[in-house]
Amino acid sequence: MNADHGDVREATAPRSAGHEATRRGRPDLSVRPIGSADLPAWANLLRAVEIVDDQGEHYDTEDLAEEMSDATLSAADDTRALWDGEEMVGYAVVHARPGAQETDRIRLEGAVHPLWRRRGLGTRLLDWMCDRGRQAHTQKNPQVPGLLTTGTGAGNAGARTMLERAGFTPARYFFGMRRVLSEPIPAAEIPEGLTLTTFRPELDAALRATHNETFLDHWGFQPRDEEVWRIWMTGSRSFRGATSHLLLDGDRIAAYVLTYEYEADTAVTGVRDCYIGQVGTRREYRGRGAARALLSRTLLAARDAGFDEASLGVDSVNPTGALGLYERLGFRTRREWVNYDLALDEP
Image (cartoon, rainbow, N blue to C red; front, top):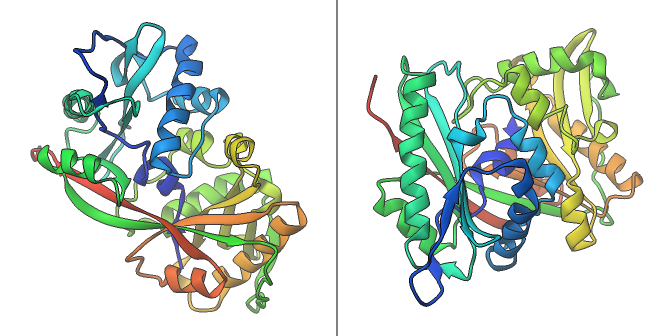
């Protein structure tokens, strides 16, 4: 059973890309790339967007600084912000990485302040992201087909209409699931011959290799290089090794669950959530209850560490039966997202 839930927060449910403005009068806005001094204004914009769009995601300046530290992201080339004086009222970011193997998936994200919607700003930002995405594809991975990808809440009719008018089509649906940790947690036996351990730094390189092997045949997956792994996975400030578990067959990693805690979420909601970002089992160990055993231990560890809830995201058509497993472990769907794709010309 495999589920790379990092993509849900990182890619599949971006920050409400493409909404438009509602203020009366013609907006006189300036445009520039996002710099380090702009992070507080960016965080303020995202707070305003979350109040209206209810994506379940909150970001502080430290989160944004970490994301911008990705060496493959050029602030000058890959970011834009719309400004009304000192207030950021819209933004756009294009994530494109070299080294694509079969398909170059270029991730677009953006948002417009709720008070500035329905005046064409979302379309303006989307047009720029599409143009920049095509350029980035040509620059970084012209040898393989290119694909622009973004997403939005399933109920966000405005964003979905805008994306479809631009030629994007729905590609995948994802569920955001939660469970309260005060409720009983089902027990599960460790599969025979395997040993349970929490994350240890000396296992990190092998864990990345295991993840890339385990998810190679999954929809939309691109192997994680060292930089992605550092920014988004075990090197992230949100990663929690104490509640992340692995099953070992000798020195070989058979299965794993990686967890995260987003401090900005806790600061706003007052609820400590253990986010389960990745669940993976090597093919030869599937069907033995490895994922269930790991998830049970992870939920118990999160409860004992003082977390109130656990959450995750799952592909609605995950071929390994992840959705059913999560429901049996007490998770219930709270949100739905739609991933949209737009194919670029063949190389």
